Image 1 (cartoon, helix red, strand yellow):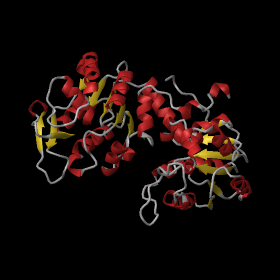
Image 2 (cartoon, helix red, strand yellow):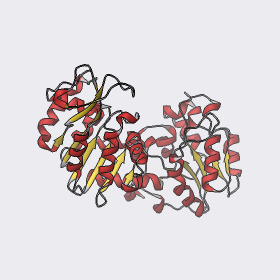
Image 3 (tube, rainbow, N blue to C red):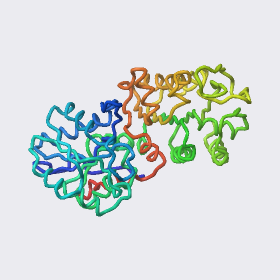
Length: 398
């Protein structure tokens, strides 16, 4: 992927325009309809305020959940609109559709003070199908389109890349920051540059490593990915599941990376990922045949911490173990503390589990950037183009 130079809000004439914004409205709610995680909404608030300050008429669209192309009252955007009204401290009006002529008319008649929210775009089959007729219907709400949700930029959906076929398009402030941070990591990293990868999705993570081998000074691996490399080294992984189809590629990368690649020295094991079962910390050479590897051990946390010392650029994507369970979260949280302890480095963190580990330790503000899109960030690390970002006009063309 070439260094991204995409059109942003600073490049656009926004004054009194009707602006259609694709935001992250996929907020989880409890049984009472209260939003339990508003981080996606909060990420787009600066863009919305920026537009309102320029007297723009703002129409927001997005999805919530997986309603499979038909209306589902439990996945409506009413709770999201209510929370947005609190965050913006101005009236937010939720309409009962997206592309119907009556909905378009009501959106255009809304007061300038109001922010309009269209109902869940996934109530229509056309969104995920990338239907251009549906995209054209959405485009009727604006004179300009602003994409401001990084995670969704990897999908060729009507509400993401489709609308950009019909309207001048630019990146919102949240997406602009994502593009800038990943451009720095991928194309101009200060050295030493350390890549930290964990989690599963082994083929994707191996492709990310293959893309970064040329620039990374060190690579630290944990989680299920580490087991693939341990298997490639001929070490047993107990009863842990290993993707055998990926072992040959891991073996090739072991040879290419040499001593730049650090794998765990010890592991936290148990018969299953259950908190009441006995845990054992073992050296990787002594992995019990009847146990699974569920976290990296304390010696590995120290080893990785030493490898990170002095780094100038760090990118981290994926947990070191089953970090959603407290008994197996120490490795991921220990790594989070090590990365947060690098105030002079550019530290970019992606993935829900990695972000959660930082938040649990109260360290979110101690890293340079926590991405809002774990899957999108992994795609960029693989060198893939994201349809949503590709659809935004280049600065040189504006």
